[in-house]
Image (spheres, protein in one colour):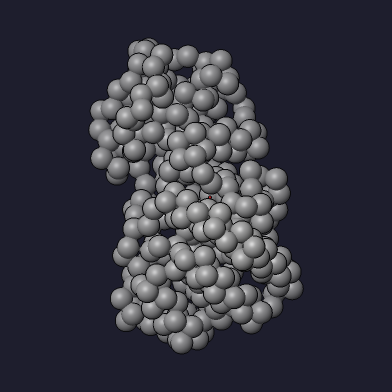
Length: 323
Ligand code: MEV
């Protein structure tokens, strides 16, 4: 039995379709070249041992018989612990295990570090215990884990972490299709957003305004379909226009912020084809679709508007075994 393994999985950025994807509309997501790394080692003990210094977890220890039972699981450990519990239950494994995690990026950016960690842990366990899980099985077990921890979510971030590249995605992995990538500039607002509360906020608004908000979800879905076609034919101007339309629709869901707007307008003014928030909104990042000629100007404008330019490459490789 192989006893030690290192696995990495990429973070993600949403290109089109956030929020509406939670209600069954499609989205387009891309994996970024900022990765989460997980080392897994089988041990002779009865414990899950976890070191995740990036999220303040050091020498965390849990009896494997009590995995996931406490209500007060610390946030940084929850995804790993529930992932191990689910893997052990579903694949009939019981063993001591030592896990260490680290990340190329700050969990503040909204790149989906929790989902990437979950995917990397499931893949690592599959290797250590020679279970040979397929990508689809890794997706399903990871999605189950993430739903158990945070209750809401479409699973788009998990798909990006597993398959990588740029993906057209429908909730729960009903459709997962690779599409072309787009060159982009990413700006961070400096404001950390909480995805779960934003998803709940939109669901409250939907309850109050079924027809209007339902209509906006429908329009976002149509924007994503058009974006998919524009990607196929390489129509950059139209894609930029669709990004701007998507941003307007997100604004009407109430998830835009002044900080995001500043960076978005700065990017558009500096020659981006289009720009929008990326993810749940409420802060985190915006993304601008740029030509190579406009890239420098757009980066400069985002900085001048108070944003931090995150140098990430999109369309990055999905989950992989490092050693
Ligand atoms: C958050 O990054 C994107 C949302 O659509 C939530 C989800 O799809 O899980 C708001």
